[in-house]
Structure formats: C-alpha cells, structure tokens
Image: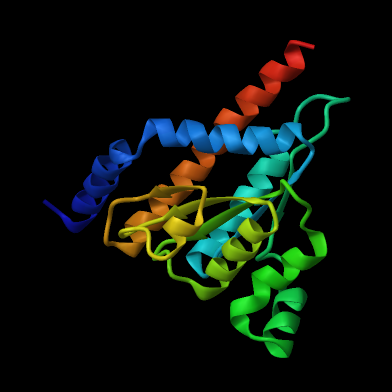
Length: 192
C-alpha cells in the first residue's frame, strides 16, 4: 500500500470512531448559544488557528438564515494579528486569547477551543477563564485529550497520535457541525 493510500485509509478509519452522540451534544450547545443571542469564540494555534478562523467564517456565513432572523455571532480569536501581537508583547503569548475574551465575553457565551495536543497554554488559559466566568467550553482535541479535555464541558477527542490526521478530522468535524447548525437554524426559521 502506498503512503498516500495508507494516510487516506487512516482518516477514513478514524472518522467513524467519533461519537455521534457527542457531535449532537456539540451541535446542541452551538444552537443554544445562537438562540440566546450569545457569541461563539473560537481559538487554536498553528494549524488549529487556521481551523478556528475557517470555523468562525463558516459559522457566520455558512449558517446565515433568511431575514429577519439574526445570524450566528462567531469570532475567531486568532484573526486580529495586531491584537494578538500586542497582548503577546505586553503580557505573554499564553494570554493572547484570554485577554481578548476580557473585552468581548458575556456570561453564557461559548468558547470553542481547538488543540490537537490538548496542551496549548493559551488555549488552556482561555478555557479556564471562560468556565470561571459562566461560559461554556467545547473542545476539539487529539491524542488522549491533553489538559484541555477535562477543562471543557464537552470534549471531542480524535483518537489518533498523528497531528495531520487529527487536524484533518477537526476540519471535517467543523464542517459537519456547521451543516448541522445550518439545518437547525433553517428549520427554526421555516417553522415561524
């Protein structure tokens, strides 16, 4: 078997291992945040930062209901390079997400934390701060969940030890969650 066939097979074998019940629970939490008019904040580092930005985009645009229904409020804490570098320079890099939350967060907002290892210090601090300030924390991780999984209300752990495989599964999960949320929002709009 070629290397690329083996990799694609590994992705195909890993995705069915993910809990459909937990995917529904994550969808419920995202939908609940939307119906309350609260904000979904998303964060991650490196490849997970790219996933966070993409997910926030999809949540804002890909779930948009018809007028007059409000859109999903989602912000990627990864997207403002000036703000990230200012906090990193003036405090420390491990505080770049938590410090942004102090400006925008309201009780009942949601943090969607993405960390393949589950051990990114800035993601951990944001998750801990969110939980301490009456927010909900959802997490996408890999390996065994790292230190992030126990901090989250719900953590979906990709059971793999390969960073690229974990990140690919995270991307698929974010697209799936976007689709499921779009369907719920559309059903709500059509029932009114």
